[in-house]
Length: 615
Image (cartoon, rainbow, N blue to C red; front, side):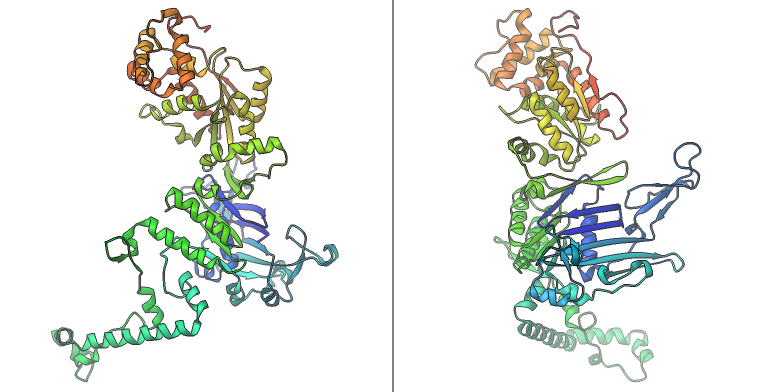
């Protein structure tokens, strides 16, 4: 699939993705990960036609009546949500677009598929997009476009949908050349469902493999099963205990006589699976698995991880078909961390192409950074973002931050970037202890990250991480010290971030940690560090040098975490300046934030300064 175009489908007003390779979809909630996979299924999988259609499959348009300013009375204000909101006021009704379209371009067709699509093939350019014959390069490859249209008939109040060839159709005139279901079934496309694996029913992945390996032998095996089950059911009906019970039931209240003029004999009552067909029986059969010493237990008894792993194994099995395309929604949700990454990597290596959505950073880790498409949602409008392959050393240096810093934050709308690991520990520790007085930053959709994790950290790395984050659609907030930062660096940070929160002048994270405390509390917290040090950093240090001695030790030995916990035990409250910073971050993360781009945190007294604010 080299190109996907979505128009007015669910929450997408318009979306166009081009990719000759793998795609992993991630991003914030309600941004459309599942909608993209559903759109592909509607085009490529015949069984998707059996799913119930809903008005929410059509992109919604809000008609708002505005008293003054904005849209005029009766004019439309378009929003991108995929479903109408409940409780919408009468003055703002939600209407649906009359139709939705999804178009997929398929390339790298083998000879058999080219024969199936004879008459609807088109030449394609180097990017795999269809072009006219006069625009095509010599010996250009063939491609085919398949399109799905969902229509709402206002008069009949019904939804209709179909899959057609755009090349030989005229939707404006209502003329469509439909794609037969048999041709869609011939496509090597596999949908990895979250349902139960190892099913024998028709259409299941396991059944597809059984039928493909040896259709005649498979049919014979199922016929034998049907015959034996039918014979066993007849034997059961004729068993003395069962026959006697049936006879009692028929004789009760003269039911047997009232049902038929003839005397109903016990032998006239039999049993069979559902409608008597082999498929009805196969639908009722569920797999058992013998693991450890527990014996053969139903697959569901082994937990969600085992079930999910076997489901992925089925997809890997089908992915061995040359050029197979794998579709999967919410991949890895039921898997542990290691298997989520491992099985995603196996899928990527074995399939011709993978399109999957996920909430798990471990799954995205199995793909190249440029294969990630991050979906976002701002003010009800959806957007997508994608990284480019690094073209220089600066890009390679920036990409190092992708896996370590940004990948764990994929589903968060906002990242707050600290200068390094020490700052991250302090802000993160205080943030975890804010409940119940205040909600943590995660409640505002914020993920704390560091600009590097060691020697590559520092305030100068913040623009690098920030630029990478903004290219992926994150809202970016920087948390910086003002102890020795150069104005040029600060200007670069301001240009790369949406909001910058700055500590007071000449204040580093260590000073912010101690602001608002007294010397006795600092000494008590420092005394607990003997668990990690041979000597208390405050031992024998005069009051006028205490703050410097403690902060130097914290920075050099990386003991901010245990010191902070001890200090909170002494003060019974988190450091007020750190709390002030977190409050600013939570406010700036709001989509409705309209405050200053640079927020200066006010100074607070340091221990032993007797209320002086210039620290």
